[in-house]
Image (cartoon, rainbow, N blue to C red):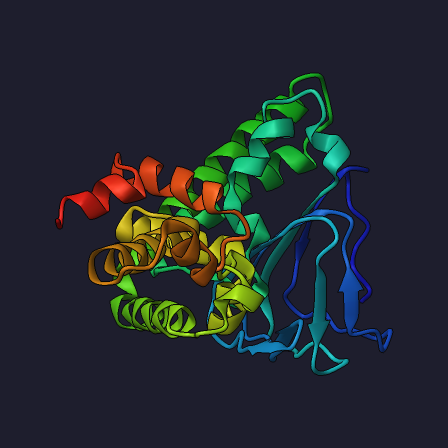
Length: 284
């Protein structure tokens, strides 16, 4: 892409304004952490999903993710920046392990962060601090100062993502409605013995969201993870079967997709503080 040579071997900050892709390559796999803020970019694809980058937004990629553009040329009006961080740069720092707690690095590109004007000013201010340190003479303080700025950047991004989960009420409510329908339809299936319990992967793929983004979204909106939503629906159906049918606990367990009745009984007691038979006895 004709990117300028970075000033540090393990971290690079690139200004995107005026860049063009003259290589004809439109698929990239980074072995780096990549943080970007982009404006005026054409559509990009993550897997089979397209996302329109005409508006300014912030995205995070962890090593090994694939980014693919629809066009081979980067438009002239593209603006923003990209920050590349080699994993080795984090070695022997607080971020070496703490970076894993920032779940948005596992989100898909189409789950990027929309920034308000005020939020963008804050983010760009932190990036400018990194840029100033990046262009300074490298000394024994440089790495820790940049790490501190990165921790600040990641904390703000986490705050802004949480705000996005809350403020995009209409689209997020739609996700909750679809999730409830998916779970209801799944447990209404008479073939649970063959299909087994619904998985987080199944739900996220059906909702066209990454598993991590779905978990974070549900946690912010409901206080519960995707797995907890599955268990809630499971307990709802289990209680219905125990209170309205004469099926044995084993028959109910198999009917709900459990291979072993003991696993069902253990989960039921953990969730309700009662055994399945104890719960049934309250209706007699």
